[in-house]
Length: 171
Image 1 (cartoon, helix red, strand yellow):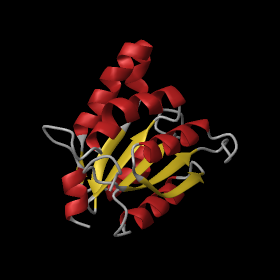
Image 2 (cartoon, rainbow, N blue to C red; image 1 turned 60 degrees about the horizontal axis):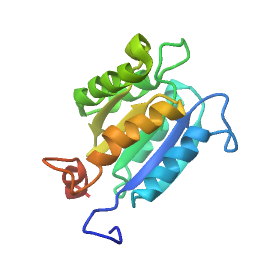
Image 3 (spheres, rainbow, N blue to C red; image 1 turned 120 degrees about the vertical axis):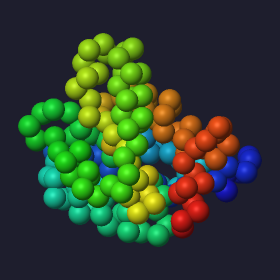
């Protein structure tokens, strides 16, 4: 439990999907990791993964099979560049898609970057009662997604609804 209220702490795995970042250059992963901990959640595991569709799918498959893990958060490799394959890697694993996540992310991005927002393939879904979220790799996109969409939905006190009850009920 978080120390100041009845909020439920979740176990979250974080992956940066990139061929160029290392643990010392992963500013977006650092920002997200700090935000996860500041929100009172537990960092289950953090990795940097190459932009290989099958590697990403294998790691996420392993994570969603972990009984303690509630959320998988991926950043990077969601755009239209030829090597970006996170949506293709993860889509076959999902039991349900959360269409509103990508729709809202692009709407909010539109306010910051205009028509370039249409090139985001940010998405979310549920797999084995684990929330799986994929966002762009830029720090500004990660901040936008975390602050306006992800963190509120991982807060058990967020009304009128949030994902926490669904995620912990099946653990």
